[in-house]
Each structure stands twice: as C-alpha cells, then as structure tokens.
Image (cartoon, rainbow, N blue to C red):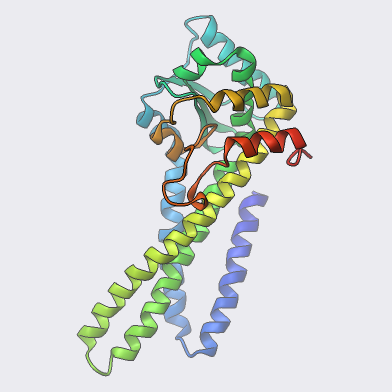
Amino acid sequence: MMRVGLFILTNLAVMFVFGIILSIFGVNAHSTLGLLIFAAIFGFGGSFISLLLSKRMALRSVGGEKITNPRNAQEQWLVDIVSRQANILKIKTPEVAIYQADDINAFATGATKNNSLVAVSSGLLSAMTQDEAEAVIGHEMSHVANGDMVTMALLQGVLNTFVIFISRIIASVFAKALEERSETLADIAYYVIAMIFETIFGILASMVAMWFSRYREFHADAGSAKLVGSTKMIAALEKLKISHEPNEEASILAFCINGEKKAKFSQLFLSHPPLDKRIEALRNQSYID
C-alpha cells in the first residue's frame, strides 16, 4: 500500500504543478481537470486490467500448465524449491507452472506478491543443472518479493497518463489557434496532432519503462545471489548466453530471466541488460546491499 500511495501522491503533485503552469498560460482549469481524469482512467485502466489478468494471459500465451499435483520427481523438486524460497522471503508460495519451449527461460507475474505465478520452460529444465535452475527461480522469486509487477503497472499507468494528457494539451493549443479560420479544420488538427504526439511521447515513455525493467533485472539477479549464492546465479547467466532466442510472448507479458540478446533498434528499448553486464554486476556485487 505504501508503494501505491507514493506513486499516487507523486502523480498528483506533478499534475498540480502542471495545473499551475497551464493556468499561467490561460488554459481553462475545468477542461484541464476533465482531460486529466480522462487520461488517468485510460492510462491506469489498461495497465491495471493487464496486471489483474496477467497470470491467465501469460499461461495462455505460452500454453503453460500449472502444477497442482506433481507427477514426477522433477515437478516435485520445482514445487519444493519455490515453496522453500517463498518461506525465506516471507511471501505466500506462488503458483508454479511449466510450459513447452526450447529456449531457457522462466517468468514471474501476478497482481500482488501474495497472488503470483512462477513458470519455467521445458528447455530450462532440460538444459540447466539443478543449481542453475534454482538460481533462475531465485531471480523470479526476487521479482515477486520486490513487488516488481505492481511497480511496473504503476509506472506504466503514470507514463500512459502523461502521454495522453500532454499530447492532448498540445493538440488543444494548436486547435485553438485554428478555430478562427475553421472549426472543422481545428477539430481535424486536434486529432491528428494528438495522435502524432501520442506516438512520439509513447516511444519516449517506452524507453523509460525499459530502463526501469533493466534496473529491476540487476536487483532480481542480486536477490537470487542472496538466496542461493552468486556462484550459482553467475553459472545460470553463463548458460543463458548459449541458449535459444527467448520466447517472445513470455518476454513481453512478464518479468522473465532471459530477454532479447540484441536490440532491434536501440539498446534503450531492451527490457534486459546484456548478460555480460549482469554477470559483471554480480561479480562486483554492485547491486547487492
């Protein structure tokens, strides 16, 4: 609750400052408030709906199967490791799932740290030793214990709100300047300019979101190192360097261990830091408190 309250207060404070600035430039306060409410509803609405449905969406996208009653020693080991780490971290044991994929990967998702899911790929279980797999699970459990899913949803909601709000404020200024010529032209200009700036600000917002994702990956690695030891976590990351390109659906929907190895456009759009940098951070203990 403290995390949610802090984000809300920060958002309100920034909006208050924006309100003062806009009033100085003569923007109608009532219309601005209405726009802000509209932006917040759409900005946070989609983000939180995705969060609430994240477990179901993630499992469906990768064809994952939850382990309710372990059918073999491997599934029993997996459930036991998740349960043991949950006890150490003092959180409710997440649901556990396996999905069929050649890539070495795992992900965590869920609405809260006590209502979460940890899933691993069949490729991970077949390619990694138990020590390496334990480290990967520790990484995902650290994401859960740190509340990274909720924080990302809140951050995305704030970013979405600002993208919608600022884009439409700019569009309103342009449209107002064209009203004297033609109201029809002003209306068309408003929607066109709003779409253009939403695209521009949306790209910038995604860069911020990806920076946060990379930042949290370092901390999840450090969290796993605390749980199982740096040696195991480094060995797991070394194994990832020779793995297949990760399953795109798992990478997009949740916090996963293995991201894209190369950026399609720029390093700024990578959700995960390069593996060599993650290994170096663990060796230097730069993210371990």
